[in-house]
Image 1: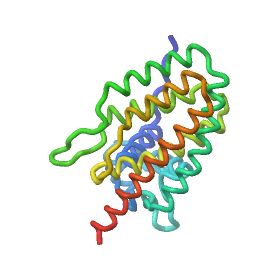
Image 2: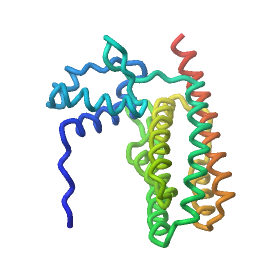
Image 3: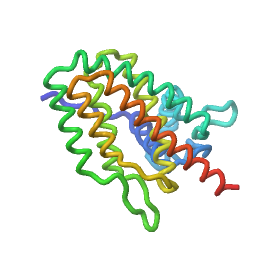
Length: 229
């Protein structure tokens, strides 16, 4: 069995910073202090700079001349634009996956869906409700499993970047959520349509799923803005 290559210092810094940005441990707009990151992770300054350059290329960090790096801000306009773009990319990936997917693809999708439906979406952190890390990982794996049979590297790369960017919004808004939904039923409907190889229905359900998520997030972002003023 081939061994996995060891992570470089830059890889470790990249994974840690991306996780902190996605989970909002690094808040939108926050300055990323390279010296502090290097000291905490026990890596070189060059490794942190390389990691931040990679994140900037994915729009997960912002580089400003003479000011270093910061976490991208969030806005309703940005979220809506991300969602509209993601819907188009997801449809292309789903249609290609359904067309080309084999029994191994179906089996992996069944396993990903089974795991997702057995986990709670949220958990308590003190008196605050937050997104469960285990559910977030299973949710990402489920959505990736749906499109895993899409063999276009370009589409899959764009899709992964869009997913990460919208995931940051989801995590930020969970404590402020005021609208309830049956997200498990939405996932099951998408799963059933994909397994049935009904590309039109699967694309339609994914469109509705992502738009509803955005509607909820827009409401949460509005609440966050009102709280801050």
